[in-house]
Image (cartoon, rainbow, N blue to C red; front, side, top):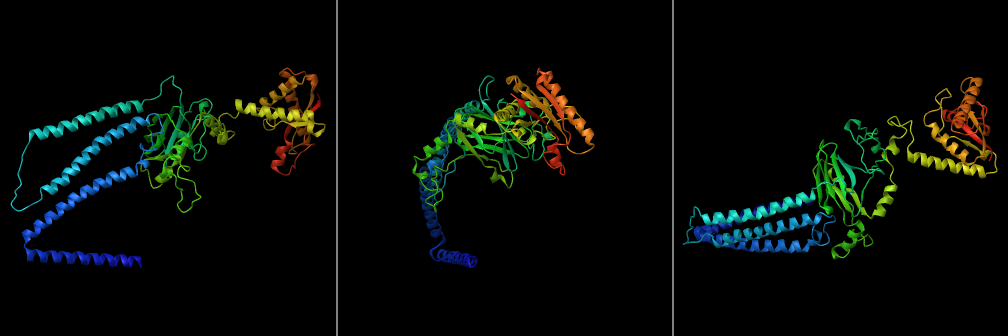
Length: 499
C-alpha cells in the first residue's frame, strides 16, 4: 500500500510540473518573452539572496547548537597531553577557512543578485587586473605559509618518539579483519619478538616467538586499559589489509600497514571517570541513553573511550570498535595483576613449549607455597593417612628409574623442608600400575624410590633420616581398568614417620 501511494505521489508531481511548464509557456506568449525573462531573473536573484542568508544563519546556529558534541569544544576537550596542540591548529585553520568561506559565499550570491540581467544594462569585460591578481595570490600564500609552518611544528611535537632514558609503557595493537589484537608486556616491561612465520591459528595468532624469554610474560587482554598521566607508546601493525588505529578523544590516528610497523606516543590526561564527570555538567548528556526507558543510565554515565578503525577495511569494518579505559596507576596495577600471560595460558606444557624441562620463578614460588601448605597440614594432623604426601611433579622416563629434568624442583622443596625440620624422618615409596610383570614392577618401584633417596642425600640430607621402599602394583589408589586410573597408580610418595 505504501509503495502504491509513493508511486501515485510521484505521478501527481510529474503532472503538476508538466502543467506548470505549459502555463509558463502560455504566459510567455501572452505577456511577451522578454518581460517574462526579466521577471524570472528578478525572482531568481531574490531567491539567491534569501538562500545565502538562510544558509549562513543555519550554519552558524546549528554549529552553536551542536557545539557540545564536537571534538575540541564544550566537554570534548582533548584527553591527551598533545591533543590541545592539534585542537588549536584545527581551530586556527577553521577560523581562516571559515572566514574565506563566508566572504566567498556572500559575494557569490550577492553578485548573482546585483548583476542580474536587466533591460538597458550591458556587462563589462575586464581581461586582466594585476592588482587583483597580486591580492588574491599573496594573501592566501601568507595564510597558507602560516598554517603549514604551524602544522610542521605540531607534527614535530606530536610525532616525536620516546627518549632512550624515558619511562613509558609500550603496548602493541595488531589490526585484522575484523578486530584489534592487543599485546602488553609483563613484569619485564618488554614486548617479545614476533615472526609471521610462527603464526598458528588459535594458539599463536600474532606469531609470538617463544624462544625469546621477553615473550613469555606478554598478555593479550580484551580491552585497552592505560594508566593516566603516563606516557604510552603504541606499536601499531596489521595482519592483513590497511587499518587505522583511531582514538578520537585522544586525537590519536595512525595507519596500521601490513609489513611496516608504525607507532604513536601519547599521554592520557583524563581518566574515564573524570571525563564522565565533565560530561555530566552539560544538559545534553543529562538524558537517558534509551529515550523509551527513563530508568536507563544517563548519557554521561554510559560514556566510554573507544578504539576504532578509521579505514574502510572491509564489510566487517564496523565491528573493530574496542573498549578503552583510562584509570589511576593503582587501578592499572590491580588490573594488570589479574592478567595471565598468553604463554602460560595456552602454550605452557604443549608441543609448542620450548621450555618443557624448565620451571619459571613464578611457578617455583607458587608450587613451593602449595607444597609447604600441604606439608604443614600433614605435620599437624593426627590421621595416619594424612601423613602420606604424593609428589605432584616428580616423574620418571617411561619404563626406567631416570628422573625427568623438572623433578628436581619439587625434590628441592622436600630438601628445604627436611632442613627446616631437622628431626623429621620420612619413608619414600614408589608405586606402579599393574601393566606388565609384577616382579619387574616391584623392582622398578624400588629403584625409583632409591633414586629419590639418593638425590636427597646428594643435597646434604642425612641418609639415616630416610628409607626407600618399592610397592609395585600392590597399593593402587584407582582402578587399573582405565588409563586415567593407571596414571594415578604410577606415583611416588613420601610418608612422615616422625618430626
